Image (cartoon, rainbow, N blue to C red; front, side, top):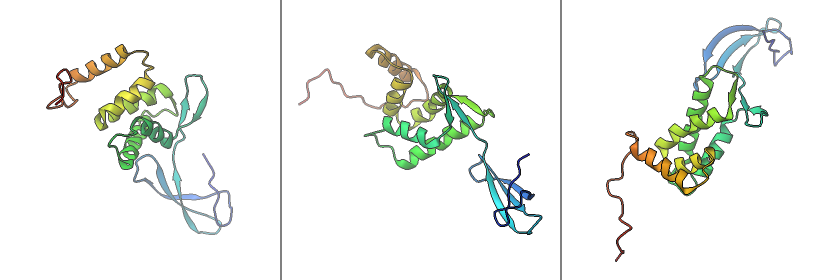
Length: 167
């Protein structure tokens, strides 16, 4: 059990009066009372999540790092900051729902791919090419063929025919 110090009198003890899930669903908001000064205060508690990188090194999970990485794949695409923030929240929720305090970087990449595919197919291919370490045009062609076979991916109503000269 963790002792929470009173922010007013620094007493190392407090009593929980009420606990609720925060609006984001990822943390717990607790209302506490100090038995010494009887003042009330709130705490927001979030389980720490550690990312295990390919090298074996660890670092704290960062939603902002997800948003920045996906943002690079979305450069020049019609994707808003709000959409990136929502994608970051979706990925964090999925990763935290595993219940584990550690997650592989590989699993985070997988958690990014599905919502990114729904957001923007070009950004999805860009991200997938780095994440999956595409080495050749064949890798891109396979990924595009997989997208075309995916029933959830919208098909363009009319694709331009580049084989004919443009007038």
